[in-house]
Length: 242
Image (tube, rainbow, N blue to C red; front, side, top):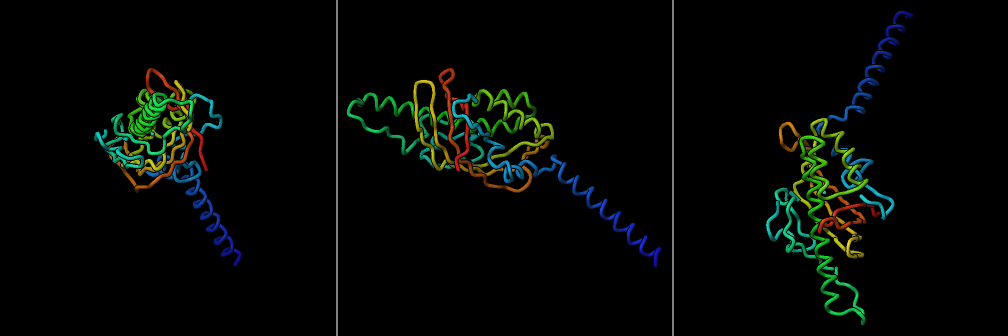
């Protein structure tokens, strides 16, 4: 009987060690093909792809588009329309400035033109961001992202991307839908936006140049700060909106 107890005890101990080892392995293996999407859907939520900047003043993702791809504020963009947006195709429905007796028609038109440019550039910035996630290495990622982001937020995205790109894992976005795009304030070189959008994504194998794993939809709700650089609006900060 004592020998039998020793045997059961040894078997239980061995099983416990095996289960523990497998558990640790699963928790630490970030090279799984679905690890990126898992983190997007987990505790990191949108911060994984869009970043978070708590200070709105800090400097800080769709891939070729048809000319009329953004004929409305919430028009979806498919996976072949994410990088180059037609400046005349993005229409914002709720961006009319408040009327003021001291504001001339000329000023109103100028403000509308400014807001339209901000919206168009922002949507292109998001496309550049997601396109960068198919880069073969971190240097290429940085080069692409620098066209849309600047400052600490760019660096934060680069640090996050390096972890996945080194494992041969990127992100494939097949569609983006902008549900809300409002310019809250705009001046000559700075602007603040309130944006809601959603996108459909899968993990992307850099080695095979192909999407892998299951498809998931992500929802993004952010307040965005932009800065005008060389006649183009780039993203300097993003904070989540509950």
